[in-house]
Length: 74
Image (cartoon, rainbow, N blue to C red):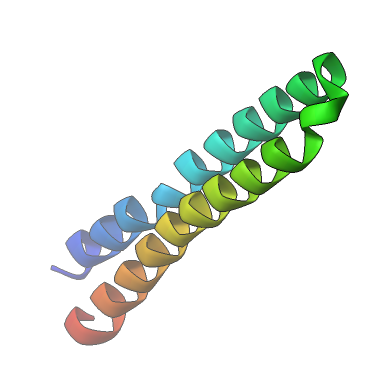
């Protein structure tokens, strides 16, 4: 039973991988957009920060769920 709990917690924490990939892609595209259109830098930056915050929140939720699985069921 404890191995299933560990697997469940690991799957919950995998959201961090998706968030990292998403933030990396978004940052690359934002840098490319700023290089093409420097006058739109402030709009691009604010949109990028909002998107990164939402993606990072997803990773934090996965981490918290993983901890809750280990603490409550382990």
